[in-house]
Image (cartoon, helix red, strand yellow):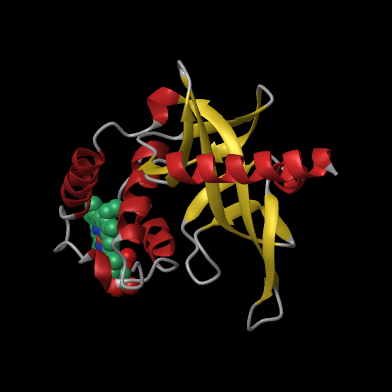
Length: 195
Ligand code: HEC
C-alpha cells in the first residue's frame, strides 16, 4: 500500500518536474538521437524539441510527432503536415524508442501513431540563437532561389508540396544535403498551412 502510494507520488513529482523544466527549443544543426549510447536516428536542423534536462555536454530532450504504423522510420509533425522531425535507422529503432500516445486512422484508412520519445543529444546541437538561425535560413533561401526567377513566397506551397518543389529544382541547382534540408525546413515552417 505504502509502496504504491510512494510510487504514484514520485511519478506525479516526476511529471511535474518534467513539465516545469520542459523548455521548447529548436535544433541548430542535424542531431543524432542517442538512446543508451547508441544512435537510433537523426533529427534535422530546425526541428522543435523540448529540453528536459541539461547535463554537462549532453542534453536530454523530448520529441513528439506522428508516424505511420506501416512506415515507422519517419516521425513527422502531424498527419497532414509531413515536416520531418526524426528519421530512425530502421523500423525497430522507431518502435522501441518511441512511446505511442494515441492511434488514429486517416481518410485513406492508414493507421497513424502519435508518439513521443526521450533522447540524449550533444548540447551543441540546440540552437543558441533561434532568431539568428531563422534569419540565416531566410537569407540562404533568398540567395539560393532567386537567381533564375523571382523568389516564390514560402506561403505559395503547403508543407507537403515544398519537398517536391525543391526536388524538381535539383536539375537546375545543386544543393548539398545540409543546405537542402535547411531550406526545406525553413519553407515548411513558413508554408501556406504551417500554422
Ligand atoms: C539555375 C536556375 C534556377 C534556380 C537557381 C532555381 N530555380 Fe526554380 N525554376 C527554374 C526554372 C527554369 C523553372 C521553370 C521550369 C521548371 O518548372 O522546371 C523554375 C520553376 C520553379 C518553381 C515553379 C514550379 C511550378 O510548378 O510552376 C518553383 C516553386 C521553384 N522554381 C522554386 C525554386 C526554389 C525553391 C529554388 C531554390 C532551391 C529554385 N527554384 C532555384 C530555375 C531555377
